Image 1 (tube, helix red, strand yellow):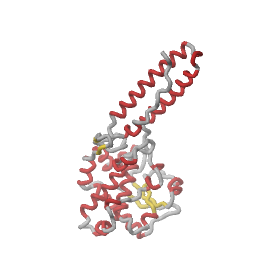
Image 2 (cartoon, rainbow, N blue to C red):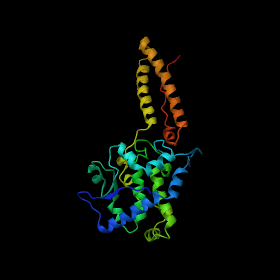
Image 3 (cartoon, helix red, strand yellow):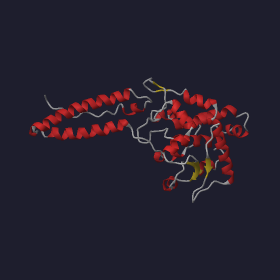
Length: 290
C-alpha cells in the first residue's frame, strides 16, 4: 500500500474552514486510492501518443525523457526524489486567493501544493476535483514536467504527466463511483468531456514549476552567438586579415554542422519535445564568395 504523508496547512492570511478541510480530506483519500489502483498503474505504463506528423512516442511529452516505468516509480516513491532535493517528504496543502500570496510565501523544507479558495468554495468543485488537482501538482513537484523553460505546443498539453495524471485520477475514481457515496455524488456534477480541476501551476502560471532547460534552447543560443560574430566579420569585407578570414571560414563550417546536429537531435527525440523548435531553425547568414 503506497501512502503519502500529507498535511493540510494554512498561511498567515488564508486558512481552510472545517467544511473545506472535510472536502480536502475526502479528495486526499480518493487520490491515495487512485494511485494504488491497478488501472492507474497500467495506464501510466502503457501510455503513448501520436503527434501531427503521425510519429508515435512511448513516453510522456516533456517529462525529462523519463520512461513510463520511471514516471510511475517516482509517483509511487516520491520520498526518494524529495530527499535528493533535501526536502521533507511530507506534502503540505495550502490555500491561496491570488498569485501574489504564492510568490511571497517562503517554504523551508516541505513541498507545497496550493489549492485555490475560489475553487474549493464552490459546490461543483468536488473531492474528485481536489484529488486531480493534488495529483497534477504532485507531478509538477516531482519534476515530471520539464516544459517551464521550453516551448511546448499547447495542443500536446494533455500528453504531459501532470495533465494526464489529473484526468486519470478522475477516470480511475469513476471505476468505483457506484460503491463510494462521495464519488457518486461528485459524478452527478462532473462532465468528463469538460473536466477542469484548475491546478494552481496552470492558473497562476508556471513560476511554481522548476525544471531543466531545453537542450535545444542551448543549441539556439550557441548558434545565435556564432551568427553575430559571423555577420561582424563578413561586414569587414576586404579588410579581413588572414586570421580573420580563416576564422570566418571556420564559423561557416561550424554553423552548418551545428544545424545538422540540431536537426538530428529533433529527429531522435524520445518524447517529442525536441520537435517543438524543429521549424525555428536559424539562418546561417550571408556566406562569403568563394
